[in-house]
Image 1: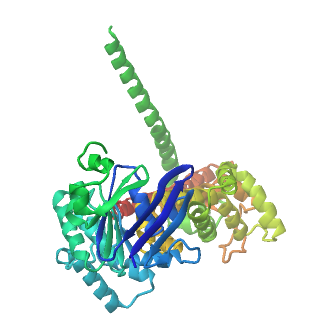
Image 2: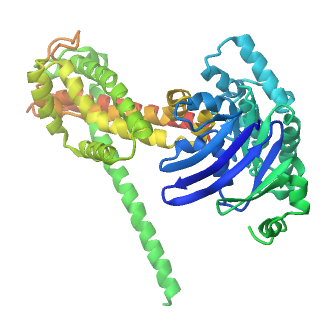
Image 3: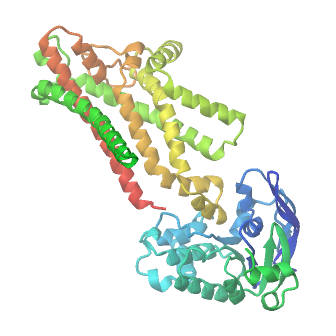
Length: 250
Length: 285
């Protein structure tokens, strides 16, 4: 059974047909990169997995999205519970205007966990996993907004991991960061692979080549090619893919 | 003269005009303050604040009016703040965009423009007569609540709207429900803006006279109100009453009372500015 599976997914923003009949399967404990020019639908597709598109008015989705074989667009599924199982990291670091500790503990607190020992343990574990613990362990009560951009993004990753999801979705997590912070995030993604299934949207093709096992190329709402990353970057089977990764458009 | 020189003159002309306009308002305020202070400042002492009203100008004070105002304001906040905030949250967060919410929105904007005396007439009939609350503090507070509700609703909405979408997404992404997102993320972030709106609304309520006169606030109240059903007067009405008296002493009293009222309003605005700047420092997105 695949960890994530999309079957003939179509998505419409009002009249606009944004995703066209996309089918794809993602195995557990892999890193999958979504690449493609702006507006190709890769972020929109990513957001189908945790139903974040529900927050936008006027969106219609057909087809099936399965996680561990369960259809997440079945009406009786509890969306909030579903989202707890899937972590998400956004393009721009978006820590809450709270202190570092409360940012990481947020996901547990909304689950109703208030036991200090449990929270302490989860905060420390998540910050360690996100390679941020050493930098912040002495001032966990400091405002998260006082951290640098790269630290904020690692904090957001820690926050997503604190609730122990099995999947982490990342929407261009390093696009707003400097090269050093970016490489830290990339190292992190590589390490997290053993515990999580990671899907990452990126504009940076070198990044996709460095960190992902499989790569999917989207263009104008269609999935053009989906294959092992090594194959995609050395020997793509479609001409459009070839053109995009060699920088001829996009 | 070439066109560049003409443009420079035009530029200078407009700049001077803008400066004059800016100072016009300030000058008016300065003149007002000067007149009021020069007349009333010497009249203000502890006796003036703690004396009951009197027929003799020299022994009359604002004690009952001050207490009446505080009663009215506290009750107004208790009534209007929760309702206004909840309505603002509903319209901004829950209300779907359709003809019904549009209709509500347009009408809230309209309500903000209704002259306050109309609210007074509404309050007199609805609260004073139909609900039988008479010319009590409660009637006054309910009437002023109606008056400032649109202000609170609009400022709550603006404050909520200013909370970045990315923060909501972060919360929803972690599996928070709508209410958890609103109460844990949106409201704390919007708090400064909401409080600023509330305080400005209170400042508005402090200055209102007309609706309170209509609902029957008394001019002469020789006792301090002890409950929400008591009759009352407020500072603005006391001032109004004093300036209509022929004796010079009462005019001085009015000036002194105006100084107290102005101090209240300035203090309120000061607090609003303080909250806004503190909150801006705490939550820079």
